[in-house]
Image (cartoon, rainbow, N blue to C red; front, side):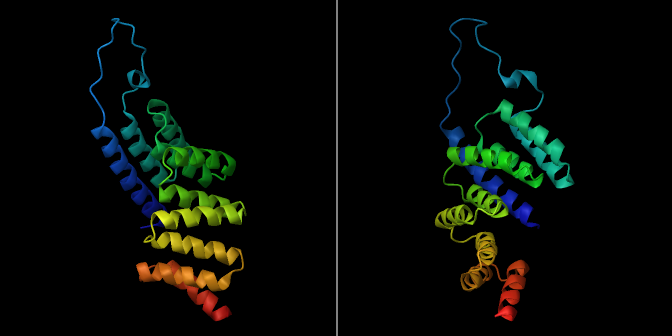
Length: 199
């Protein structure tokens, strides 16, 4: 699996659980007091529900059609607004197109709706690292680790950030932590080997 697939798999599982929790609290809709007075929602205008649209957009992402994926995520966002999973995926898609400022706005919206999601923190950290805003990236990686200290990808990403910050000793420790959690993570081993040879 690629890092994107792992990130999407973890995020999708997390959001699916959150949606399940939310559904448990929903009540049956009440009949409108005035017949015909109910405004039409986005559901009335499309053959697909938001969940189906997200699945379709995910398929387009896997095919590499970022523009089509973004259009479908946008439609899902109109049909079911304020869904952190959709906003997260829109941010990721924009980031893949180097539309970093737009991506960051969607990540911020997703995080405001779901502040305890370690995957959103990771994604924001990657984007801030790309933008050379290293301290902000570091803050988000720290937040991600405080929420989930057992994700090797977070340690790997933190190691990469620390290399950029020239903090090589701490970077080694991060790669070692990643390997402690996933001994087969070749990316961490390769980066650790580089640092060991350069020392």
